[in-house]
Length: 141
Image 1: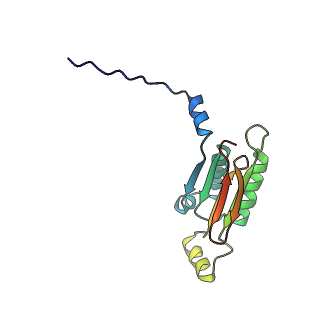
Image 2: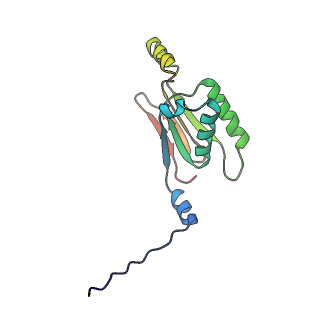
Image 3: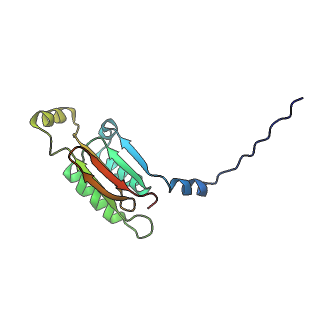
């Protein structure tokens, strides 16, 4: 009879998982189809909820100027000195669109462009280069 090989398994506590996650940078890419299903308040609540969990959010559409103002206001209200210091964001696209693109966006209810939102603790800089956007972030925050 062959002997069974014993393997040691280690239970991982939730605290250990949180410590591991703090050493990673997480990006969530949110497609415009998902954003279309939400009203403005739900969309901003979802974004802020993720950012407060140290997740950098990349939206497949540009926020409207009113949504940007509301997001900044919500973030300012929720800032606390222990866990949440605020947000950094960059929007690219909705002012750069041509007439044909604007008409297409109006008909499909999409806002062309992208928006990047992240926690101030992690996002050191977001820079627009001539041919790309660079996000400089640090682990953990």
